[in-house]
Image (cartoon, rainbow, N blue to C red; front, side, top):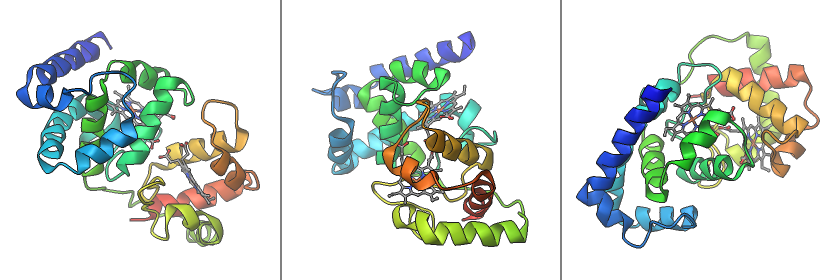
Length: 220
Ligand code: HEC
Ligand code: HEC
């Protein structure tokens, strides 16, 4: 852990001292920068996007020990970040920072990232290809899962599970992580709560969750 944080500090230093970073931080170094507004601003500026993408690529090597190379996780309880909607990723970083979403490690890590570093790392991951889970699931489970998905989930997460500018991509996500996420929303204990997801999970049984997870995890 100490080693990871030391490495992380070195990356942050490298970013802080790079001219691209200094330029990108002009007027943006306060903690209360609105991340959503800043993301739109960065995306409208191709040069800045490219600079932050490069800084994000460096920062991402720190995340790789858990989230995998290019954000394709190889740990069942750690989510993929590859191909994820950047606005959603930023919102989650904000939730870890303000305590609406709890995870000890992520909370600590997010505190040391400056606003533009969050934008940078999120931009990098959102532009990585998704490898997905190709493991064959039980066909009956997939049929049931598809039925649940097409009655409900697609309205926000889209037919193909890729989400959109607002909603998360869930296609190809790690199944153990998906299962835990859905059960937390259903339980609403405070580790992770969201009114829309609470409403959309409260009628699901554990068996329903197993089915919809099998279907979603197998989506491309
Ligand atoms: C020590 C392991 C570890 C490291 C290193 C790590 N994370 Fe995480 N991250 C996790 C875990 C575990 C979760 C899932 C937490 C939960 O279940 O709510 C997570 C969740 C996230 C999420 C939410 C994803 C979603 O689909 O909702 C984001 C965004 C994220 N991490 C970004 C990062 C970034 C950026 C870095 C590097 C700067 C990083 N993480 C480094 C373990 C880690
Ligand atoms: C009315 C819109 C809506 C519907 C319908 C909906 N969701 Fe969501 N979903 C959301 C929102 C908003 C979030 C982000 C919540 C947050 O910030 O934690 C989310 C988050 C998630 C996540 C967490 C993603 C991650 O990377 O951590 C999963 C998994 C998920 N939804 C699965 C489903 C499934 C499965 C269904 C159908 C049973 C469903 N959702 C129906 C709006 C919706």
